[in-house]
Image (cartoon, rainbow, N blue to C red):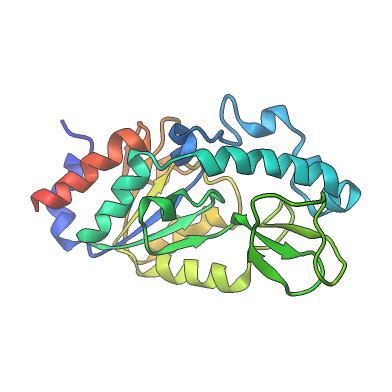
Length: 242
């Protein structure tokens, strides 16, 4: 039996699809996850690398770590999971609410991507309103803004709130979808872990695509115990056949 066979008869009624994606969808592109077996937070202290206090205590260390991550991300290419989501736009209205900061959904060709936790390819000032695309290399670490204060990666660190405008858009998309697919995320980080609740209020179908059990698995209408790269191309094929 094919993985998505159970919802085949409902495909024709699905017009708006929301994907909630996390580090797992990019793992097969060579980008480590955070909480998995070989996750980044098993090898590094999150409190020394991904909090505003850590940044002010040692901005040079934080920047050196993010520069190493950037090198990995800039050479990474979208995998079949990213590409399947992008192709799905031919058949439905697709929005991606991603916790990832790697930009691989955009690189794959997806046009409606909301980056909940920011982007590693962008920078902002730690004090003023300056924001920009990140340059390839900085002449000094940590880099300084024109105002004289330290620049930081434009990402949401632990203990920080999501930008209010981004979160409001995410809730609207979740409230309006016919189908929500949670792909490659354990959804343990708030407030992203509440998005399926909003979708359920609209009687949306909930599907989880993840090789491992998560705390949200019992709430799903369908659970696919596989990777996004292996399973999502089949999902697109079902739309083609309908």
